[in-house]
Image (cartoon, rainbow, N blue to C red):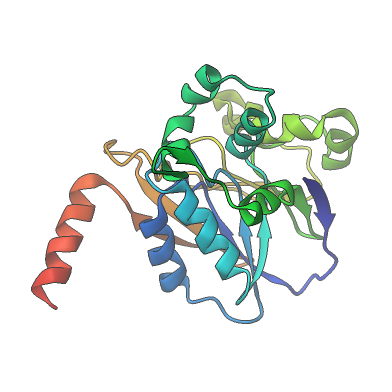
Amino acid sequence: MTNARHDAHSAHYLAIGDIHGCLEPLKRLIETLNPKPSDTLVFLGDYVDRGPDSKGVIDYLIELKQHYSCVFLLGNHEVLMLDYLSGLLSITDWERNGGIATLESYTIDGTLEIPESHLDFLKNCLFYYDTPDYFFVHGGVKPFRTIEENLCKMTKLELVWERSHLDDIVLNANDYKWEKTVVCGHTPIPRPIVLEKLIAIDTGCVYNQHSRLGRLTAIALPENHITQIDNRAQHSLMQRLFSRLHQ
């Protein structure tokens, strides 16, 4: 779990919001995005918990990295998973945050089997990805400090939990002290937020019973083009029926 800086001003990014074990929407999103060799895919974290196939998501992301340039950020749910596996977090505390779904996806015939490659994947996720024009992070940074000040004063773990930049009073004022645009996930919102200094794209893919959430969102940068996959229960059912009718 480290951090990274990138120096190419001409880079093109595809940032992807919180996945939470939702493998099928993730596959459909990547197919829709159809990344080019020059694209860098930046996954904003929260690959596990709550959804039905955390193991499948990690398998898919590991495979995806063989074909595309990928950056994987650490989400708070990856922190919870690693803390549980290292004995720092109780099963009760992880269960409250959707950990049972993750354990079930890794359980075969009653035995928990987590591949070493998956542990390596989690341990190598970045706390943030810093580029000349964008600062990618799972949670966020304090809105009243510059990014450099935040990196000096916040712990790396605080970066994955931060939400104050999305408080209503802060959003309405739209007065962020950051030197560049912060791109984040972590906090489920009905629609992506795209401001000069803030982009937030966790649209609650896993909450597919909620009429205003249940979408997996990506944004292409620098053009700010949004792509979404609808994972809401009714939409997913109709899509499967439509696919069968046209087979």
